[in-house]
Length: 379
Image (cartoon, rainbow, N blue to C red; front, side, top):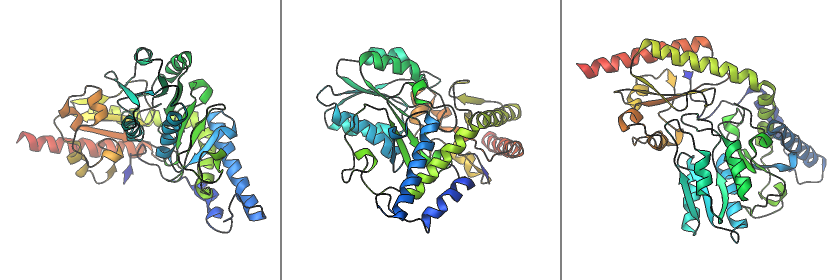
């Protein structure tokens, strides 16, 4: 199988797996224990915190480990909402956020908070001026994703953050798709909170992190002992945290090189498909998007049927969590993509293990399948 679905999940890097193995075996200590086994576990967690912090260019104590990206998003949104409830009840986000943002916002609306869902343009971009126009004296939080999981569009976070700071609102970004693919230095992005999901950057599933800028106060989601600065109770998933730390170390080491490699492969795939067939529509921003992501619509075809006749290729008709829905993608609909084109959309997301030969092979397979399906439709 040619795996072109890295925005859904990535394989665990061999270096990551190797780093984790001792903590799945003989190094089983509880990081909170005072004996030697516990001390070694604590040292491993501390080292991982430093590795994540280096990738984000922040202080280690600003990293809170979580059970994944969704938990980190929930901690950011609900934690700010509960902490600042006396100051205001207004939150701003966008219509193309991941369900791990949209659904916590829906939950907060049921609790009496007011949420503004900003529109996007035809490329998936949020306009900073729309953020400025939406802010009120009661706005306590703005949450805009760094890069969209379906089309890869990268948002102008620095401009939005400047507006948030001018008006005194906290600024969070779900960076699950961008960490490890493009620079995510928190001071450059000017964010107060930023979400990391391990399995999107070659770490295991079930581990993530939340950057919490020094001075930002959150009410915890999970109450218990004082783990993770009191923000996330529960004995740490040492093996998973070690894996996330190693994955961030690898990403920092190769970030520019890998981004360029992904961009070349993505563009090779796009050019190949354009040359071999007509009626191909790019979804997302032509330049301001993740280097590994290509979302295209095959006019007149159903993407689910197309992928069904391509068992050799792993790709997605949209976000993985929507894979069994035949409703047009909410992201593409928000961008104004017509329903028929939205139902013909396929997301190809490349990774470090892909090669030019694989991309050439995938291009031929896709082109042949498209020709065959279109031939059937015209009979």
